[in-house]
Picture 1 (cartoon, rainbow, N blue to C red):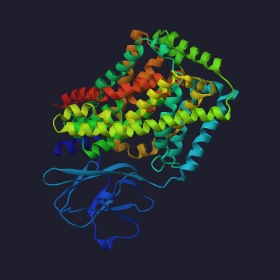
Picture 2 (picture 1 turned 30 degrees about the vertical axis):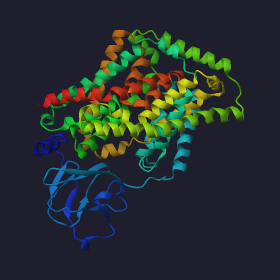
Picture 3 (picture 1 turned 90 degrees about the vertical axis):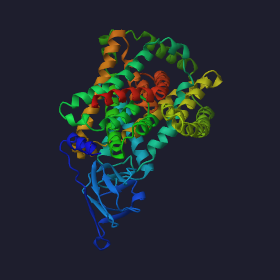
Picture 4 (picture 1 turned 45 degrees about the vertical axis):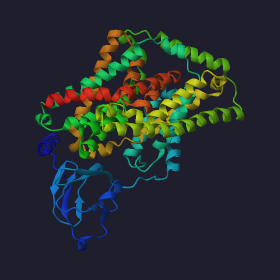
Length: 530
Protein backbone atom coordinates (compact mmCIF):
# COMPACT_ATOMS: atom_id res chain seq x y z
CA UNK A 1 0.00 0.00 0.00
CA UNK A 2 2.87 2.33 0.82
CA UNK A 3 4.31 1.82 -2.66
CA UNK A 4 0.95 2.65 -4.24
CA UNK A 5 0.65 5.88 -2.29
CA UNK A 6 4.23 6.83 -3.11
CA UNK A 7 3.64 6.19 -6.81
CA UNK A 8 0.47 8.24 -6.85
CA UNK A 9 2.26 11.03 -5.02
CA UNK A 10 4.93 11.39 -7.68
CA UNK A 11 2.66 10.54 -10.59
CA UNK A 12 0.35 13.41 -9.83
CA UNK A 13 3.19 15.90 -10.07
CA UNK A 14 3.84 16.28 -6.37
CA UNK A 15 0.13 16.35 -5.81
CA UNK A 16 -1.02 16.55 -2.21
CA UNK A 17 -4.72 16.26 -1.53
CA UNK A 18 -6.33 19.59 -0.95
CA UNK A 19 -8.92 17.93 1.19
CA UNK A 20 -8.45 18.43 4.91
CA UNK A 21 -9.67 15.46 6.92
CA UNK A 22 -10.11 16.04 10.63
CA UNK A 23 -12.26 15.08 13.56
CA UNK A 24 -15.13 17.39 14.35
CA UNK A 25 -17.35 17.67 17.38
CA UNK A 26 -21.12 18.05 17.07
CA UNK A 27 -20.84 21.47 18.75
CA UNK A 28 -18.77 22.70 15.80
CA UNK A 29 -21.43 21.95 13.20
CA UNK A 30 -23.21 24.87 11.57
CA UNK A 31 -25.21 25.68 8.45
CA UNK A 32 -22.09 25.33 6.25
CA UNK A 33 -21.79 21.61 7.00
CA UNK A 34 -23.48 18.76 5.20
CA UNK A 35 -23.71 15.81 7.58
CA UNK A 36 -23.94 12.46 5.79
CA UNK A 37 -23.68 8.86 6.81
CA UNK A 38 -20.93 6.93 5.04
CA UNK A 39 -23.48 4.75 3.27
CA UNK A 40 -25.36 7.83 2.01
CA UNK A 41 -22.34 9.67 0.65
CA UNK A 42 -22.84 8.13 -2.81
CA UNK A 43 -24.27 10.63 -5.26
CA UNK A 44 -24.06 14.30 -6.21
CA UNK A 45 -23.35 17.18 -3.80
CA UNK A 46 -23.03 20.94 -4.35
CA UNK A 47 -20.27 22.93 -2.65
CA UNK A 48 -22.12 26.24 -2.99
CA UNK A 49 -24.85 25.03 -0.66
CA UNK A 50 -22.71 23.55 2.13
CA UNK A 51 -18.97 23.53 1.34
CA UNK A 52 -17.94 21.37 4.33
CA UNK A 53 -18.88 17.70 4.19
CA UNK A 54 -19.07 15.85 7.49
CA UNK A 55 -19.17 12.08 7.27
CA UNK A 56 -20.17 9.72 10.06
CA UNK A 57 -19.02 6.11 9.96
CA UNK A 58 -20.43 2.88 11.37
CA UNK A 59 -18.09 1.28 13.91
CA UNK A 60 -15.21 3.40 12.67
CA UNK A 61 -12.76 2.92 15.51
CA UNK A 62 -9.38 1.57 14.41
CA UNK A 63 -10.09 1.79 10.68
CA UNK A 64 -8.22 3.83 8.03
CA UNK A 65 -9.99 6.29 5.81
CA UNK A 66 -9.01 6.97 2.20
CA UNK A 67 -10.02 10.17 0.39
CA UNK A 68 -9.04 9.70 -3.25
CA UNK A 69 -5.31 8.94 -3.12
CA UNK A 70 -4.72 10.11 0.46
CA UNK A 71 -4.72 8.10 3.65
CA UNK A 72 -5.54 9.23 7.19
CA UNK A 73 -5.82 6.84 10.13
CA UNK A 74 -8.21 7.58 12.96
CA UNK A 75 -9.23 5.91 16.18
CA UNK A 76 -12.14 8.03 17.26
CA UNK A 77 -15.89 7.72 17.08
CA UNK A 78 -16.37 11.39 16.21
CA UNK A 79 -17.52 12.42 12.70
CA UNK A 80 -14.90 13.52 10.18
CA UNK A 81 -14.96 16.83 8.33
CA UNK A 82 -13.71 16.79 4.72
CA UNK A 83 -12.90 20.23 3.31
CA UNK A 84 -11.14 21.58 0.24
CA UNK A 85 -12.15 19.01 -2.38
CA UNK A 86 -12.19 20.15 -6.00
CA UNK A 87 -15.24 19.65 -8.18
CA UNK A 88 -15.43 16.30 -9.92
CA UNK A 89 -15.45 12.62 -9.03
CA UNK A 90 -14.11 11.45 -5.67
CA UNK A 91 -13.99 8.29 -3.65
CA UNK A 92 -13.87 7.54 0.05
CA UNK A 93 -12.98 4.16 1.50
CA UNK A 94 -12.59 2.37 4.80
CA UNK A 95 -10.01 -0.32 5.48
CA UNK A 96 -9.95 -2.42 8.62
CA UNK A 97 -7.02 -4.16 10.30
CA UNK A 98 -7.53 -7.23 8.08
CA UNK A 99 -7.08 -5.17 4.94
CA UNK A 100 -10.72 -5.40 3.85
CA UNK A 101 -11.80 -2.22 2.08
CA UNK A 102 -15.27 -0.75 1.54
CA UNK A 103 -15.61 2.31 -0.65
CA UNK A 104 -18.15 4.74 -2.06
CA UNK A 105 -17.87 7.19 -4.95
CA UNK A 106 -19.39 10.64 -4.99
CA UNK A 107 -19.34 13.74 -7.19
CA UNK A 108 -18.98 17.39 -6.27
CA UNK A 109 -20.08 20.34 -8.37
CA UNK A 110 -19.66 23.99 -7.50
CA UNK A 111 -23.28 25.00 -8.12
CA UNK A 112 -26.55 23.43 -9.22
CA UNK A 113 -27.08 23.79 -12.99
CA UNK A 114 -29.11 26.73 -14.27
CA UNK A 115 -31.59 24.30 -15.84
CA UNK A 116 -32.58 21.25 -13.80
CA UNK A 117 -35.79 20.16 -15.52
CA UNK A 118 -35.24 17.40 -18.07
CA UNK A 119 -38.20 18.73 -20.05
CA UNK A 120 -36.43 22.08 -20.47
CA UNK A 121 -33.05 20.43 -21.12
CA UNK A 122 -34.56 18.20 -23.79
CA UNK A 123 -36.17 21.24 -25.40
CA UNK A 124 -32.80 23.00 -25.38
CA UNK A 125 -31.03 20.01 -26.95
CA UNK A 126 -33.65 19.78 -29.70
CA UNK A 127 -33.33 23.54 -30.32
CA UNK A 128 -29.55 23.10 -30.61
CA UNK A 129 -30.13 20.39 -33.24
CA UNK A 130 -32.58 22.73 -35.00
CA UNK A 131 -30.03 25.58 -35.16
CA UNK A 132 -27.23 23.30 -36.34
CA UNK A 133 -29.21 21.70 -39.16
CA UNK A 134 -30.82 25.02 -40.07
CA UNK A 135 -27.37 26.51 -40.63
CA UNK A 136 -26.32 23.50 -42.74
CA UNK A 137 -28.87 24.71 -45.28
CA UNK A 138 -27.44 28.24 -45.36
CA UNK A 139 -25.00 29.10 -48.16
CA UNK A 140 -22.80 31.14 -45.81
CA UNK A 141 -22.07 28.02 -43.71
CA UNK A 142 -21.31 25.59 -46.55
CA UNK A 143 -17.53 26.02 -46.31
CA UNK A 144 -17.69 25.67 -42.53
CA UNK A 145 -19.59 22.38 -42.66
CA UNK A 146 -17.19 20.98 -45.24
CA UNK A 147 -14.56 21.10 -42.50
CA UNK A 148 -16.65 20.65 -39.34
CA UNK A 149 -19.34 17.93 -39.58
CA UNK A 150 -22.76 18.82 -38.21
CA UNK A 151 -22.61 15.66 -36.08
CA UNK A 152 -19.55 17.03 -34.26
CA UNK A 153 -21.43 20.20 -33.29
CA UNK A 154 -24.35 18.08 -32.07
CA UNK A 155 -21.87 16.58 -29.64
CA UNK A 156 -19.71 19.59 -28.82
CA UNK A 157 -22.32 22.31 -28.22
CA UNK A 158 -24.11 20.38 -25.41
CA UNK A 159 -20.63 19.76 -23.91
CA UNK A 160 -20.12 23.53 -23.75
CA UNK A 161 -23.50 24.02 -22.07
CA UNK A 162 -22.60 21.32 -19.53
CA UNK A 163 -19.15 22.81 -18.89
CA UNK A 164 -20.72 26.23 -18.26
CA UNK A 165 -23.13 24.60 -15.77
CA UNK A 166 -26.19 25.65 -17.74
CA UNK A 167 -27.24 22.00 -17.91
CA UNK A 168 -25.87 18.95 -16.12
CA UNK A 169 -25.60 15.33 -17.17
CA UNK A 170 -25.37 14.48 -13.46
CA UNK A 171 -28.84 15.87 -12.83
CA UNK A 172 -30.37 14.61 -16.07
CA UNK A 173 -31.77 11.24 -17.00
CA UNK A 174 -31.75 12.03 -20.72
CA UNK A 175 -28.66 9.96 -21.55
CA UNK A 176 -30.24 6.91 -19.95
CA UNK A 177 -33.44 7.56 -21.89
CA UNK A 178 -31.59 7.99 -25.18
CA UNK A 179 -29.27 5.00 -24.72
CA UNK A 180 -31.97 2.62 -23.47
CA UNK A 181 -34.96 3.68 -25.58
CA UNK A 182 -33.88 5.70 -28.61
CA UNK A 183 -30.68 3.75 -29.37
CA UNK A 184 -32.38 0.33 -29.64
CA UNK A 185 -35.24 1.92 -31.60
CA UNK A 186 -32.73 3.42 -34.02
CA UNK A 187 -31.03 0.03 -34.39
CA UNK A 188 -34.37 -1.54 -35.35
CA UNK A 189 -35.22 1.24 -37.80
CA UNK A 190 -31.77 1.39 -39.39
CA UNK A 191 -31.63 -2.39 -39.81
CA UNK A 192 -35.11 -2.61 -41.33
CA UNK A 193 -33.74 -2.09 -44.82
CA UNK A 194 -30.28 -3.52 -44.22
CA UNK A 195 -28.53 -4.75 -47.35
CA UNK A 196 -26.75 -7.86 -46.08
CA UNK A 197 -25.42 -8.73 -49.52
CA UNK A 198 -23.99 -5.24 -49.85
CA UNK A 199 -22.35 -5.48 -46.43
CA UNK A 200 -20.81 -8.83 -47.38
CA UNK A 201 -19.41 -7.22 -50.50
CA UNK A 202 -17.50 -4.76 -48.30
CA UNK A 203 -15.04 -7.62 -47.87
CA UNK A 204 -12.74 -8.54 -44.98
CA UNK A 205 -11.23 -5.09 -44.54
CA UNK A 206 -13.88 -4.09 -41.99
CA UNK A 207 -12.87 -6.98 -39.72
CA UNK A 208 -9.17 -6.41 -40.33
CA UNK A 209 -9.46 -2.77 -39.26
CA UNK A 210 -11.56 -3.73 -36.23
CA UNK A 211 -8.88 -6.11 -34.97
CA UNK A 212 -6.15 -3.61 -35.89
CA UNK A 213 -7.95 -1.16 -33.60
CA UNK A 214 -8.01 -3.80 -30.87
CA UNK A 215 -4.29 -4.49 -31.29
CA UNK A 216 -3.64 -0.73 -31.16
CA UNK A 217 -5.26 -0.56 -27.74
CA UNK A 218 -3.55 -3.75 -26.50
CA UNK A 219 -0.04 -2.51 -27.29
CA UNK A 220 -0.80 1.20 -26.89
CA UNK A 221 -1.36 0.87 -23.14
CA UNK A 222 2.07 -0.55 -22.24
CA UNK A 223 3.82 1.80 -24.68
CA UNK A 224 2.11 4.82 -23.11
CA UNK A 225 2.96 3.63 -19.61
CA UNK A 226 6.58 3.03 -20.59
CA UNK A 227 7.00 6.45 -22.22
CA UNK A 228 5.46 8.31 -19.28
CA UNK A 229 7.77 6.41 -16.92
CA UNK A 230 10.70 8.42 -18.32
CA UNK A 231 9.14 11.52 -16.75
CA UNK A 232 7.49 9.78 -13.78
CA UNK A 233 9.53 6.59 -13.18
CA UNK A 234 7.53 5.84 -10.04
CA UNK A 235 4.52 4.76 -12.14
CA UNK A 236 6.25 1.43 -12.71
CA UNK A 237 6.70 0.81 -8.99
CA UNK A 238 3.04 1.08 -7.99
CA UNK A 239 -0.28 -0.33 -9.10
CA UNK A 240 -1.27 2.19 -11.75
CA UNK A 241 -1.42 -0.70 -14.23
CA UNK A 242 -4.40 -2.10 -12.32
CA UNK A 243 -6.34 1.09 -12.93
CA UNK A 244 -5.28 1.25 -16.57
CA UNK A 245 -6.58 -2.31 -17.02
CA UNK A 246 -10.12 -0.96 -16.55
CA UNK A 247 -9.57 1.59 -19.33
CA UNK A 248 -8.42 -1.22 -21.63
CA UNK A 249 -11.60 -3.15 -20.80
CA UNK A 250 -13.76 -0.16 -21.63
CA UNK A 251 -11.93 0.76 -24.85
CA UNK A 252 -11.99 -2.72 -26.34
CA UNK A 253 -15.38 -3.79 -24.99
CA UNK A 254 -17.62 -1.66 -22.82
CA UNK A 255 -18.80 -0.93 -19.30
CA UNK A 256 -19.25 -4.59 -18.37
CA UNK A 257 -15.72 -5.40 -19.52
CA UNK A 258 -14.41 -2.42 -17.56
CA UNK A 259 -16.04 -3.68 -14.36
CA UNK A 260 -14.70 -7.17 -15.03
CA UNK A 261 -11.13 -5.85 -15.19
CA UNK A 262 -11.60 -4.08 -11.87
CA UNK A 263 -12.67 -7.37 -10.31
CA UNK A 264 -9.92 -9.43 -11.94
CA UNK A 265 -7.02 -7.19 -10.92
CA UNK A 266 -8.46 -5.53 -7.81
CA UNK A 267 -8.04 -1.86 -8.74
CA UNK A 268 -8.86 0.32 -5.74
CA UNK A 269 -11.93 2.55 -5.75
CA UNK A 270 -9.77 5.68 -5.86
CA UNK A 271 -7.86 4.43 -8.92
CA UNK A 272 -11.06 3.29 -10.61
CA UNK A 273 -12.67 6.68 -10.05
CA UNK A 274 -9.70 8.44 -11.68
CA UNK A 275 -9.64 6.03 -14.60
CA UNK A 276 -13.32 6.64 -15.40
CA UNK A 277 -12.48 10.32 -15.91
CA UNK A 278 -9.59 9.39 -18.22
CA UNK A 279 -11.78 6.91 -20.11
CA UNK A 280 -14.68 9.30 -20.71
CA UNK A 281 -12.56 12.33 -21.60
CA UNK A 282 -10.16 10.61 -24.03
CA UNK A 283 -12.86 8.46 -25.66
CA UNK A 284 -15.13 11.46 -26.26
CA UNK A 285 -12.24 13.58 -27.49
CA UNK A 286 -11.21 10.88 -29.97
CA UNK A 287 -14.77 10.49 -31.23
CA UNK A 288 -14.72 14.20 -31.99
CA UNK A 289 -11.48 13.71 -33.96
CA UNK A 290 -13.05 10.88 -35.97
CA UNK A 291 -16.10 13.00 -36.74
CA UNK A 292 -13.83 15.77 -37.99
CA UNK A 293 -12.11 13.15 -40.12
CA UNK A 294 -15.38 12.32 -41.90
CA UNK A 295 -15.21 15.79 -43.44
CA UNK A 296 -11.89 14.81 -45.06
CA UNK A 297 -13.03 11.34 -46.09
CA UNK A 298 -12.09 11.66 -49.78
CA UNK A 299 -8.65 13.13 -49.06
CA UNK A 300 -7.88 10.41 -46.52
CA UNK A 301 -8.95 7.72 -48.97
CA UNK A 302 -6.52 9.16 -51.50
CA UNK A 303 -3.79 9.04 -48.85
CA UNK A 304 -4.57 5.37 -48.13
CA UNK A 305 -4.95 4.71 -51.90
CA UNK A 306 -8.20 3.05 -50.88
CA UNK A 307 -10.94 1.83 -53.15
CA UNK A 308 -14.23 2.77 -51.50
CA UNK A 309 -16.38 1.69 -54.44
CA UNK A 310 -18.06 -1.09 -52.41
CA UNK A 311 -19.04 1.44 -49.74
CA UNK A 312 -20.31 3.90 -52.35
CA UNK A 313 -22.19 1.08 -54.08
CA UNK A 314 -23.88 0.16 -50.80
CA UNK A 315 -24.86 3.80 -50.24
CA UNK A 316 -26.12 4.13 -53.82
CA UNK A 317 -28.14 0.92 -53.61
CA UNK A 318 -29.74 2.09 -50.41
CA UNK A 319 -30.57 5.50 -51.87
CA UNK A 320 -32.00 3.84 -54.99
CA UNK A 321 -34.09 1.48 -52.90
CA UNK A 322 -35.33 4.34 -50.72
CA UNK A 323 -36.30 6.35 -53.80
CA UNK A 324 -38.13 3.37 -55.35
CA UNK A 325 -40.42 2.86 -52.34
CA UNK A 326 -40.56 6.43 -51.06
CA UNK A 327 -43.99 7.94 -50.56
CA UNK A 328 -45.67 10.65 -48.55
CA UNK A 329 -46.26 9.03 -45.15
CA UNK A 330 -49.77 8.98 -43.77
CA UNK A 331 -50.70 9.06 -40.11
CA UNK A 332 -51.19 5.29 -40.22
CA UNK A 333 -47.75 4.77 -41.79
CA UNK A 334 -46.14 6.69 -38.92
CA UNK A 335 -48.07 4.71 -36.31
CA UNK A 336 -47.11 1.42 -37.98
CA UNK A 337 -43.44 2.38 -38.19
CA UNK A 338 -43.00 3.72 -34.65
CA UNK A 339 -45.35 1.09 -33.28
CA UNK A 340 -43.32 -1.83 -34.63
CA UNK A 341 -40.01 -0.15 -33.70
CA UNK A 342 -40.86 0.51 -30.07
CA UNK A 343 -42.68 -2.81 -29.77
CA UNK A 344 -39.36 -4.43 -30.68
CA UNK A 345 -37.59 -2.18 -28.16
CA UNK A 346 -40.04 -3.30 -25.47
CA UNK A 347 -39.56 -6.95 -26.41
CA UNK A 348 -35.77 -6.49 -26.37
CA UNK A 349 -35.95 -4.95 -22.89
CA UNK A 350 -38.24 -7.76 -21.71
CA UNK A 351 -35.99 -10.55 -22.96
CA UNK A 352 -32.74 -8.80 -21.97
CA UNK A 353 -34.16 -8.38 -18.47
CA UNK A 354 -34.32 -12.17 -18.19
CA UNK A 355 -31.34 -13.27 -20.28
CA UNK A 356 -28.79 -10.87 -18.74
CA UNK A 357 -29.52 -11.69 -15.06
CA UNK A 358 -29.86 -15.41 -15.86
CA UNK A 359 -26.44 -15.58 -17.49
CA UNK A 360 -25.06 -13.18 -14.89
CA UNK A 361 -26.25 -15.48 -12.11
CA UNK A 362 -24.58 -18.41 -13.82
CA UNK A 363 -21.34 -16.45 -14.09
CA UNK A 364 -21.49 -15.55 -10.39
CA UNK A 365 -21.83 -19.24 -9.55
CA UNK A 366 -18.97 -20.05 -11.93
CA UNK A 367 -16.69 -17.63 -10.07
CA UNK A 368 -16.53 -20.04 -7.16
CA UNK A 369 -14.90 -22.72 -9.32
CA UNK A 370 -13.54 -20.86 -12.36
CA UNK A 371 -13.28 -17.13 -11.57
CA UNK A 372 -11.04 -16.35 -14.55
CA UNK A 373 -13.39 -18.00 -17.05
CA UNK A 374 -16.38 -16.22 -15.50
CA UNK A 375 -14.70 -12.81 -15.80
CA UNK A 376 -13.81 -13.46 -19.43
CA UNK A 377 -17.49 -13.91 -20.28
CA UNK A 378 -18.80 -11.06 -18.13
CA UNK A 379 -20.21 -9.14 -21.14
CA UNK A 380 -22.75 -11.89 -21.72
CA UNK A 381 -24.24 -11.18 -18.30
CA UNK A 382 -24.87 -7.51 -19.16
CA UNK A 383 -28.49 -6.53 -19.75
CA UNK A 384 -27.40 -3.65 -22.01
CA UNK A 385 -25.35 -6.06 -24.14
CA UNK A 386 -28.42 -8.20 -24.80
CA UNK A 387 -30.57 -5.13 -25.39
CA UNK A 388 -28.26 -4.05 -28.23
CA UNK A 389 -27.94 -7.58 -29.64
CA UNK A 390 -31.68 -8.29 -29.57
CA UNK A 391 -32.65 -4.92 -31.08
CA UNK A 392 -30.17 -5.53 -33.91
CA UNK A 393 -31.44 -9.08 -34.48
CA UNK A 394 -35.06 -7.91 -34.54
CA UNK A 395 -34.22 -5.23 -37.11
CA UNK A 396 -32.38 -7.70 -39.35
CA UNK A 397 -35.22 -10.24 -39.11
CA UNK A 398 -37.79 -7.57 -40.01
CA UNK A 399 -35.71 -6.70 -43.09
CA UNK A 400 -36.83 -10.06 -44.56
CA UNK A 401 -40.51 -9.20 -44.11
CA UNK A 402 -42.94 -6.70 -45.61
CA UNK A 403 -41.94 -4.25 -42.85
CA UNK A 404 -38.80 -3.58 -44.89
CA UNK A 405 -41.01 -1.23 -46.93
CA UNK A 406 -41.31 1.07 -43.91
CA UNK A 407 -38.06 2.53 -45.20
CA UNK A 408 -40.25 4.25 -47.79
CA UNK A 409 -41.93 6.35 -45.09
CA UNK A 410 -38.66 7.36 -43.41
CA UNK A 411 -37.54 4.51 -41.12
CA UNK A 412 -33.83 5.29 -41.47
CA UNK A 413 -34.50 9.02 -41.14
CA UNK A 414 -36.18 8.49 -37.78
CA UNK A 415 -33.38 6.11 -36.80
CA UNK A 416 -30.82 8.80 -37.64
CA UNK A 417 -32.77 11.42 -35.69
CA UNK A 418 -32.74 9.17 -32.61
CA UNK A 419 -28.97 8.80 -33.00
CA UNK A 420 -28.50 12.57 -33.17
CA UNK A 421 -30.45 12.96 -29.92
CA UNK A 422 -28.18 10.31 -28.41
CA UNK A 423 -25.12 12.26 -29.61
CA UNK A 424 -26.40 15.39 -27.86
CA UNK A 425 -26.91 13.53 -24.58
CA UNK A 426 -23.41 12.01 -24.85
CA UNK A 427 -22.04 15.52 -25.28
CA UNK A 428 -23.72 16.49 -22.02
CA UNK A 429 -21.42 14.07 -20.20
CA UNK A 430 -18.25 16.01 -21.01
CA UNK A 431 -17.17 18.76 -18.58
CA UNK A 432 -14.05 20.62 -19.66
CA UNK A 433 -14.06 23.02 -16.69
CA UNK A 434 -14.10 20.10 -14.27
CA UNK A 435 -11.12 18.56 -16.00
CA UNK A 436 -9.23 21.87 -15.77
CA UNK A 437 -10.01 22.16 -12.04
CA UNK A 438 -8.53 18.72 -11.44
CA UNK A 439 -5.67 18.87 -13.93
CA UNK A 440 -3.10 18.55 -11.15
CA UNK A 441 -4.68 15.21 -10.26
CA UNK A 442 -5.62 13.85 -13.67
CA UNK A 443 -3.03 15.58 -15.87
CA UNK A 444 -0.43 12.77 -15.97
CA UNK A 445 -3.14 10.13 -16.37
CA UNK A 446 -4.65 12.12 -19.23
CA UNK A 447 -1.19 12.24 -20.83
CA UNK A 448 -1.00 8.44 -20.60
CA UNK A 449 -4.47 8.24 -22.17
CA UNK A 450 -3.53 10.61 -24.99
CA UNK A 451 -0.36 8.69 -25.86
CA UNK A 452 -2.38 5.48 -25.66
CA UNK A 453 -5.06 6.66 -28.09
CA UNK A 454 -2.40 8.14 -30.42
CA UNK A 455 -0.72 4.72 -30.59
CA UNK A 456 -4.14 3.19 -31.32
CA UNK A 457 -4.67 5.68 -34.16
CA UNK A 458 -1.14 5.15 -35.47
CA UNK A 459 -1.63 1.38 -35.74
CA UNK A 460 -4.92 1.96 -37.54
CA UNK A 461 -3.34 4.32 -40.07
CA UNK A 462 -0.40 1.98 -40.72
CA UNK A 463 -2.66 -1.02 -41.30
CA UNK A 464 -5.08 1.02 -43.41
CA UNK A 465 -2.16 2.23 -45.55
CA UNK A 466 -0.88 -1.33 -45.99
CA UNK A 467 -4.21 -2.91 -46.96
CA UNK A 468 -5.53 0.28 -48.63
CA UNK A 469 -8.62 0.41 -46.41
CA UNK A 470 -11.07 3.33 -46.75
CA UNK A 471 -11.24 5.80 -43.86
CA UNK A 472 -14.75 4.52 -43.12
CA UNK A 473 -13.27 1.23 -41.90
CA UNK A 474 -10.67 3.12 -39.85
CA UNK A 475 -13.27 5.27 -38.09
CA UNK A 476 -15.87 2.58 -37.51
CA UNK A 477 -13.32 -0.08 -36.53
CA UNK A 478 -11.88 2.30 -33.97
CA UNK A 479 -15.18 3.45 -32.55
CA UNK A 480 -16.54 -0.11 -32.36
CA UNK A 481 -13.71 -0.67 -29.87
CA UNK A 482 -13.37 2.62 -28.02
CA UNK A 483 -16.98 3.79 -28.07
CA UNK A 484 -19.07 0.62 -28.30
CA UNK A 485 -22.64 0.23 -29.44
CA UNK A 486 -23.68 3.72 -28.34
CA UNK A 487 -21.27 5.58 -30.62
CA UNK A 488 -20.09 3.19 -33.36
CA UNK A 489 -23.35 3.56 -35.36
CA UNK A 490 -23.12 7.33 -34.82
CA UNK A 491 -19.73 7.52 -36.52
CA UNK A 492 -20.87 5.12 -39.24
CA UNK A 493 -24.00 7.17 -39.91
CA UNK A 494 -21.83 10.28 -40.31
CA UNK A 495 -20.80 8.67 -43.63
CA UNK A 496 -24.32 7.46 -44.45
CA UNK A 497 -27.32 6.14 -42.46
CA UNK A 498 -27.12 3.03 -44.66
CA UNK A 499 -23.77 2.20 -43.05
CA UNK A 500 -24.91 2.45 -39.42
CA UNK A 501 -25.58 -1.34 -39.12
CA UNK A 502 -21.90 -1.99 -39.89
CA UNK A 503 -20.96 -0.04 -36.77
CA UNK A 504 -23.51 -1.94 -34.70
CA UNK A 505 -22.29 -5.37 -35.78
CA UNK A 506 -18.65 -4.52 -35.08
CA UNK A 507 -19.50 -3.01 -31.68
CA UNK A 508 -21.22 -6.24 -30.64
CA UNK A 509 -18.04 -8.08 -31.62
CA UNK A 510 -16.11 -5.66 -29.38
CA UNK A 511 -18.21 -6.63 -26.37
CA UNK A 512 -17.41 -10.29 -27.04
CA UNK A 513 -13.63 -9.92 -27.27
CA UNK A 514 -13.21 -6.98 -24.90
CA UNK A 515 -12.13 -8.79 -21.77
CA UNK A 516 -9.73 -11.10 -23.63
CA UNK A 517 -7.94 -8.17 -25.26
CA UNK A 518 -7.90 -6.15 -22.04
CA UNK A 519 -6.28 -9.01 -20.11
CA UNK A 520 -3.51 -9.27 -22.72
CA UNK A 521 -2.97 -5.50 -22.53
CA UNK A 522 -2.87 -5.64 -18.72
CA UNK A 523 -0.33 -8.47 -18.68
CA UNK A 524 1.95 -6.37 -20.88
CA UNK A 525 1.56 -3.35 -18.58
CA UNK A 526 2.13 -5.49 -15.51
CA UNK A 527 5.28 -6.90 -17.13
CA UNK A 528 6.78 -3.40 -17.19
CA UNK A 529 6.47 -3.15 -13.41
CA UNK A 530 8.28 -6.43 -12.64
